[in-house]
Length: 481
Image 1 (cartoon, rainbow, N blue to C red):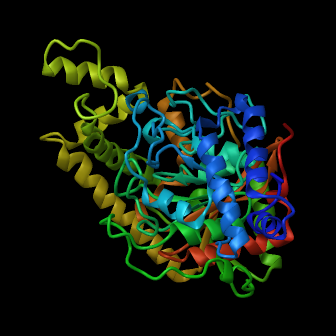
Image 2 (cartoon, rainbow, N blue to C red; image 1 turned 120 degrees about the horizontal axis):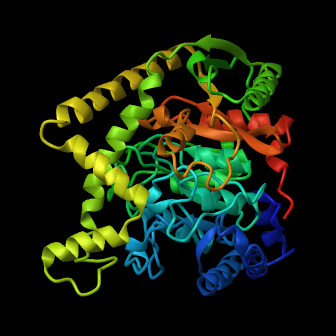
């Protein structure tokens, strides 16, 4: 059952082939069998079975959505009422959320079954899932390699068949990079398309939630539930939500694809490049036109991103002070001691590094030199995307320079770790949507193809990915566990 798509499972539930309780028990058993992947922080077995029973009743009454009774899992960055929401950090190891994030509420309303909360880099800061307080999740294709980050637990769980689908968040590539490393489909929507209410903040102007699934069709189904205006989120886009599944079968004849030369040069692994070349040739067969384009400011994306993201994280994480909620140090002697020891003991090394970088960039005398300049570069990068997308319908590129690297390989070299997101970060700075699609294997490990579109064109991206998945079977490949 764990290899079926959402539509296949929904048909099975409605035909009586199996119940949601039986389906949920199957996935809970798989989670227990593969605990060594460390994909979950919390497994909500009791709540899942209650939700499955309620879903079975809804399905029997004939009043149920497509997602009713389908077992999914939530990245542990989304607040879930009555359930620990840790954000992968010691700082929130004791935090029980008093409310549901809007994304969680929408899935609950649809009748989906939440299996639990998924492992992630601490406060979404990382590219490998190794900064998690709970230890790294492991890539099911090779358990000695990372699943990517920060949504590594989500990618590992979907790839290993521990959940039908999962939610992720993407600040600089944290849906797309782990999706590529684990051979699944992952979509970062346009900034503002999915509510951030109840999604614990890292960098508020960059964070965006999205679906992580095996297929583009499943991603369309999940996004249909996740997307939409939310008055509780001041950055939420008040725009109609298209029918994403209905757009999947549009033909690709006449599609114009742009390949930025800045993304296909030095630094890209030759095996990854060969896989992408084959994938793009498939699009030519489907009737697409391919053209080389140039986006000259992309080389400034990483420094601009880390100044902006770290500055925003410095502000967002100031709330964790040992006073109101979260970790509190033992026996503080005064208020200053409470603040400094609670934060010093509660945050991990990478989070502290980014807070320090961000605080420095925002400090008097350095704001103009770093933060303001980074925002100007952000505008230039955004203009690059707008100019490119005026010439072509979509942009295609690598998701990552290499396949998944070994656990521990880059932990002592933060710059090398940051470069793992070199092809994804610019998209977040521009706020446009992008997705990773399984495109093949290099050295036995998955490779993802990145598809980038203009603002609020998720329906077109999903259509382009789905048509590719109709003529390839990379998305159907599963690891041997």
